Length: 436
Image 1: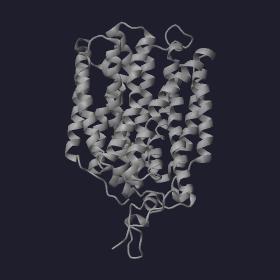
Image 2: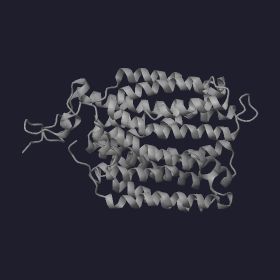
Image 3: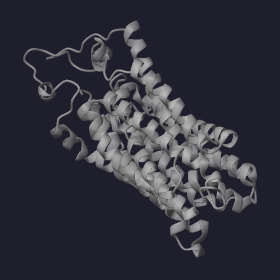
């Protein structure tokens, strides 16, 4: 019988690389939002009556082109992260994102904006899956709930900071700078990533994280794991196929497809709903709507921590509780009194449950069940299915008949989220294999 190796306690070199990797990957994914948010911020200066004179329909078409390309890219680059490694995929994708961001500032027609923003959407997809794999190589399963909860604050804080930055520089120096300045900052992030990121502990002469933490049996001469024949750091096509067809991964794809429309509807339409409900102006409506994202980081961190400490690193219980709670809240949202503080607080709590479930489904559970070998594929496929759902969420208020009103829109979202929670219940105790 194999014995578990004694874990190495607080190796300074190992700990430095762990937290260096956490920091640079957090910064990399937050940095992608710099070139993602430019068009949203610049719309005010590109609309009807301006020099560019884009109609709302053209802007919507450009956004849709971005989302479609982003969805396709998730499937491509999730697999790419496992096949060729995080470092290559991210460095190439981020550099093209910088070039595309700069090119947007020179665009003059809707066609040019659409083509370049589609390219931007495609390479933005190089971020999620590969970076998930990168983090999983430095943090073991038993600690990933809290770690990935902290890490997932990058897309709420990164999006908020990027939007404010692009809006400020665009307003002060001209709309082109809403693209050029963020691209310049992302170039700095690209250089830092080039200098300080590595794919695996083994790349800097350190043992795998499971061995460091004593989580797997020590290798012996008579044991030949199936993965031993694979090229180090490179996942085989068979392994990728096994990840994609894993029953839990397929379930998480459906769950995330049902969850993400709610998140994106509140992000894209929250301010308009506030205006219609409360009669507030643009600034006040946006401020109340932002409470949804402000509740997100706490939800991501608390959800991950609770899954580690209270449920033994099982992700499903916290995700189920969060989804069912969110579904009930969405159903009653339109019935709230027209009060600024009541709706703002309600928004924040909904954001808490949304991001708790989001980070567990799309990050922690995706990595757990994809394992290190297939983490990028698992995260990419799950996020790709969610991205297909986000297109629906962003367009839903314009798709349903006006006579339905917000009440029925929220009922549709609530039904989808509750359905997502219920289909996870049979997997309440699901755990991936300890040995990766």
